[in-house]
Length: 413
Image 1 (cartoon, rainbow, N blue to C red):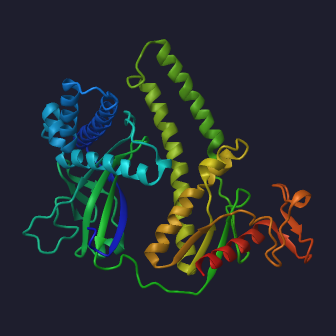
Image 2 (image 1 turned 180 degrees about the horizontal axis):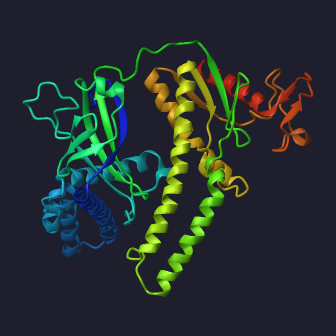
Image 3 (image 1 turned 60 degrees about the vertical axis):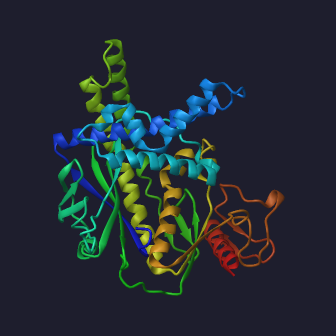
């Protein structure tokens, strides 16, 4: 897969039967168990290595744990339930590989944190691989261990044939030249199942790219979703705020049912009324997430297609969320996801996307470069201002977008 030049991700909805749901649940639990075993082994190894004395028992235990870490077969030999006929061996191997990737991400970017135990939840997930035998000369969507039977049905190891939503026209037209790498089976808290495919091909996944020689600076804010350097303004849809009243009402109802179940000493997993209400809340939350995701996908695709250079400010959402007055508005707009999508689609379309330090982009005049300081500094209330030096009137966000674009151009020079 890595040798192929073009890569693409595809996510489709799937509709498993009751038996297939049980198989997905078993594989998800087994995958989580192997991951947690790896975490537990490393925790124990860390504690044993603190013992400075050359105790034979300690040294022998360290060697035993290090041997168990090498292969998933060692863990399966100790926990025989992992050899169940419905458990995909590749899901266990991927759990071990994902644990190694988590450590690699921690060492590369320390903000990610060390791998921790995965707790049991209402979401299920495991990953498997598409394998192609040596007899297959041209791997495609139709001939691997994970394959599509037609546009609305896929076949997975252990799970078998499963109904899916329709594959996109472009991907289906390329079905003979596209190869499947990994596939992740997911169930979210709203009880919806999805298949996420990693695809690769020798041919590009998009049509011929048109270059427009246009450059755009983007200023992100909570008043409007964004203001561009060309003066365009995209309104903030505020999907979560619009749903907040209804969502809070359903959450209060969920809380009452939770208290009633606890008062009657019943497990929440066995409390049917609680589970019905939990599903209602999860579906409302999923609706907000899907609305926001659809909005961001449409917006980022339009921006990338119509501009050759995009410049945005580098925002640390985790730091901004510490401001309790703006935390709800910031989390509602989805800035981090917006920037990630711009970067991914810019790479896909062969365009350029850069982020710049937002320091002083609001307080600097885009016409003469004068920097506001002291008592002249703008506050959040100030939406327009006049430069004391060149006397040009500015709209706050538009001026900031111009400065962001200028910073991006100078950064690339």
